[in-house]
Length: 324
Image 1 (tube, rainbow, N blue to C red):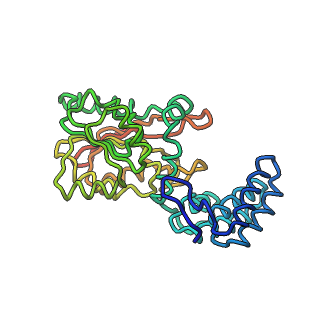
Image 2: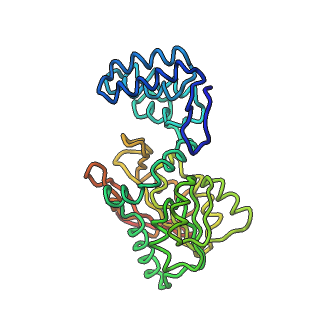
Image 3: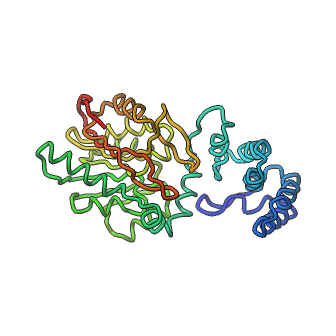
């Protein structure tokens, strides 16, 4: 495998072969000038010199796809996967998107961390201003309605914000929470959240590992929020089970999830997972949650088109009938 820098920086900065590195940089220059065919030729030379140069394989796959060479793109994505088990670039996801994967893959922690570290500096502007993101506000309103229906005040001693990002949900819920904990896989996102000063505690950790550690320590939260988190998880059943272990007996768990009209889980062109509403019901029932609300509300747009989503609030009771 080619050499790598720390997980938060570029991967495979050098292939270990100066000649291959030069060809890679030359190919990027050709692509920038619009000569994709020339760039492909040079990238082929680069990977011949350094067969484990995953970054070059990924670039080759992307350029072949742009040129309409699906088979060549699939072959190069497969080589990128073979060269990098951590799948920093998300080659496995692209294989699934192209219908060339045997099964729907999970995103690796390294890929997700790199993705959000990269977007952290412009995350709020891009998500809110360009994509019309409103997940935290919709969740706050849904939790408020659940509290009103139960004749309980919207006031929580302890809240856990899973995948807290830059702190958008923290800002929405801060007035209703005495102690607010946020956790995110991306150090860049945690740094941005810390600057906003909404949280009493912030942790950089993988979601499932954090929940397991919290359960082992006997932690208990009155409110758990996961805003725009399950779009990056093909299987969120394990997370739901662990959330149940740290949720207070009368606590609430609110989350958003992108949906689609078919069955099961799909990976969209945007490399985000969408879960069928019936599949969401199954996951929640298996985790022992009662659905208090499941409202179809687009939480963001993509190319100006609302993304089908559900805003869901659940608690620790027997499943209840509800309508969408």
